[in-house]
Image 1 (cartoon, helix red, strand yellow):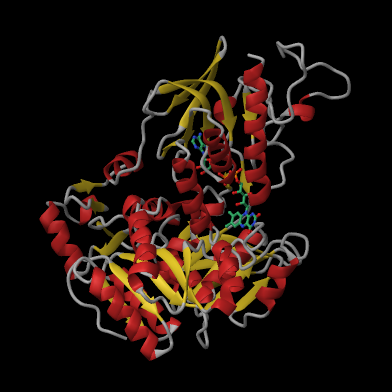
Image 2 (image 1 turned 90 degrees about the horizontal axis):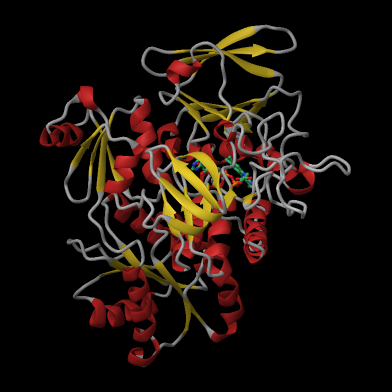
Length: 558
Ligand SMILES: Cc1cc2nc3c(=O)[nH]c(=O)nc-3n(C[C@H](O)[C@H](O)[C@H](O)COP(=O)(O)OP(=O)(O)OC[C@H]3O[C@@H](n4cnc5c(N)ncnc54)[C@H](O)[C@@H]3O)c2cc1C
């Protein structure tokens, strides 16, 4: 492995197990790109991954990765898949022999491959450079162009520090974390004129210090749009999970002037999934972050506006316009609205939990907190797929993972493949008929009291991390008196609005509501927030697409 050179030039990384080929690729790359890019070469997937991790830690940029397909231990596709988790924005190409073109074509879907190059690539002017030029051009025009990094200084047990990191991570904003009690953290705080009492402090890539910033201020300062550019749209999509992103992609690609409004970060629940195994077209699974990143770029490519940290708090009917109001007092009008606001985690109510939330107790944020779990005894509450995925993910770093499940078994609540996966991981223990009775800790979680729901017996265990995945509820209170919902707050649509032959009270049109149309004409619903929905990524995306088709039908008759 060549030692990385200094400086901030974005890297081109090449990996090939044949030392001769590896040197030849690096030589050709250096000849043309050496001035503006660091050429980093490795002779195995593992060595290249280690180099990528180190570059990530140092805040360096990787523009292009070229990987040989046929390598022992880890082939090029497997390597690129892992490399994507580290540098999702790096453009990727596979070096293959003619006989392996089938594998390369397959890789286009698995690892979002940009190109495959046939070996040998002589002369490079004809066969190698045009491809690398195109990859660099794509990278430079993407959101991953080199930006100096954002820094977060906070306390490891501060709830707001944890929220800020989560916000940045889920919005795919690269940042570096500094604990306030470590020398570099103290130095940054001093430079920012802040102290331990005013944490967290975010230092933007331009060097501006934001003391205890709210999500909206933070979003705006790291380059995310938070206010709409116009006052009237064809379509407003509320919520940026799979359903909302699906609707934005289809709406914008089909010529509708579309704005998507997301209150926190695009990706929704799916964005928090460490590995989605059952989404069509990804036989090897895909992380929620990758899926979200691609969907967001796709929506932007078609011209959809994506607003982040912008909460919708009201919906009104004003003649043929539908007015969507925001928490900051702003509003936009549109011909049609798609509600895709999904569901939010339910909270545990046992004593001590509220006080320690964000200080060792986390709702669904296993991904960003995973690094803090190394070598620890971790507890997970819940028995559904989301809890199972978190257990598998955390088991890679934690000393032990204990799942606390209220039911007598996982069979009814978790997919079979996940139950089998969990059974095969020795560090995971599943404790059934168990619930959390109390949480204890001074400033952060130190102990949890567990209750056996059969016997009522309690026992207290030491732990600093408890992750809670106990189902979710739609947060649709702001739609009170606007449109029809079921008794749990899920939004009714289409056939679910009417019982038998009875007409829907207050429905103003001659026709019946379309399939995903709510009790307000021109307002549609998609994904988990819809009553009787499937609660799956694929169905949410599908409903987003279908809702757009119905919006067109609605607009034709307007
Ligand atoms: C950890 C985890 C793992 C999962 N794994 C899988 C899996 O492997 N396979 C699978 O098929 N499904 C999985 N699911 C379920 C899947 O993620 C959901 O079914 C899917 O995300 C639903 O999409 P949605 O767009 O309807 O809603 P959500 O994903 O809930 O997105 C809704 C979005 O709307 C935003 N929002 C809410 N209210 C407002 C408002 N007032 N203003 C603006 N924005 C608002 C929210 O912030 C959120 O981003 C998993 C879920 C979790 C939590």
